[in-house]
Image (tube, rainbow, N blue to C red; front, side):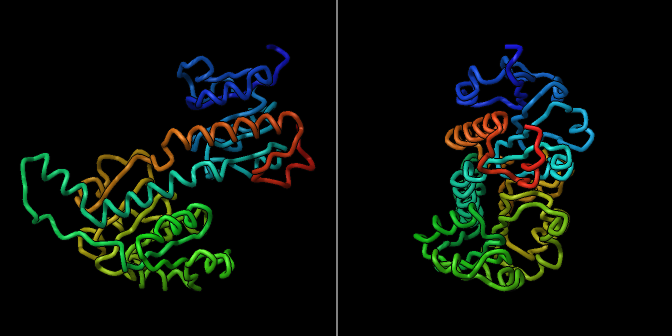
Length: 326
């Protein structure tokens, strides 16, 4: 196998990865034989990396990886990758934007239902031997207004799943044309403030960039209705957690459903962990059998394409293609 390109894995893959790369590449790294180890071991000799969202592809790491031709992400976010450095070094960065769409959209609906209907409060009450109705009235989705901040693949799927509930759906996304929203029965608003102030449920679906870090802070939360809930399955650093905790404690908003946090895992000192009007999950929105199979298969295939000198479909840094090292 010495002549084959080396593909480094930084998390346990679906068996489809081994099937796709069989005979085409040598798999190395902590999960090459089902064993864990140093997250950055053997990176210097890798020609390709198949990585989860926590792969720390800093400029220093990429400079060390002198043979690296492609980083292929099991998922959509590339905020842990220094894409500019990768481009300068001729390294392709690819992701799998379609693979997690259905799973994350369904998880969004799950968080909306859990927060709106007090499902965890009911669960805890029954488990503790209580059988009463004084944990607070829930709220229907039917007839409510759901606001989507960002209207890409996942938000569009959320809108489709929400349609049968009979909700009015708003969206704010300055990069989306009104016709796209109208086609799926969504009202596109020209300002985020309009969505925040009008919606009973606000769900975040934007990538983390330098400009929108802290997008939902004290000012944004003050615009929301007191009975509204906030859902975040995107990136934790979009939300100022201290401001959110204050709003939840003071009654500024009614609840929140969070799959992502500023620090993951959140520290035990996080004020969000002690609140009973918050539903939490451990960055698991995409954690389904179907989603893993899709993302792993597409990521492995695109890595193989780049190693063969073929342009991958989901190339994040297309400028690299003319000066690539593959």
